[in-house]
Length: 169
Ligand SMILES: Nc1nc2c(ncn2[C@@H]2O[C@H](COP(=O)(O)OP(=O)(O)OP(=O)(O)O)[C@@H](O)[C@H]2O)c(=O)[nH]1
Ligand SMILES: [Mg+2]
Image (tube, rainbow, N blue to C red; front, side, top):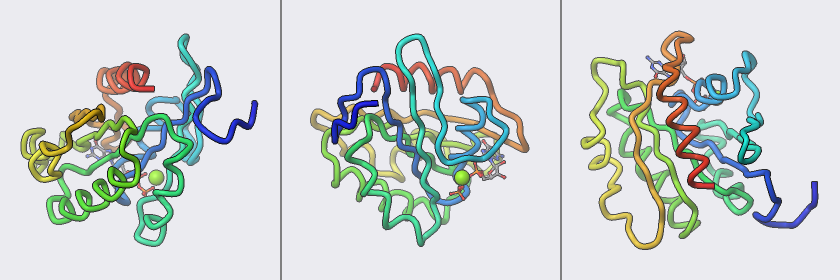
């Protein structure tokens, strides 16, 4: 691989996966890449390119490092636990901190755990995360997801995630 100091490596696209602890980041990576282990770095070969996923944990101690990984990233996946109503304001603040740090980066927000009875809907999530005001040139998508209820992955939603990522990188 050529060390180009930026986002140029042809064929390899870095997908940064962030979100509060327990949001479902590892569940998404396990579902997409089919790997049973819980590593924070995984690759997925598609006909178009190789998607290199990098997950940084969402615990309070790790969040302060999130922004440092944005520069080499082609697309940010931000996973939110839609049933964690108490921490939606925190998830919003952390997301907007990232959006301010990188003005152009494409973002896919996943409203995860839609299977849970207390999950907020996609329109409610758009409101709670203040996504309506994110405008300008940025490509930002919000998708409902159900990434890993007790090891169960909804294959359709994972395929949709992969398809959208390939459009965004
Ligand atoms: N009900 C339900 N549970 C889910 C879903 N996605 C993930 N989980 C569960 O939520 C818990 C946390 O998921 P992880 O994927 O480990 O979360 P994470 O974002 O990687 O968390 P950290 O690595 O600690 O930052 C696990 O017990 C998962 O099985 C979902 O869509 N529905
Ligand atoms: Mg994890």
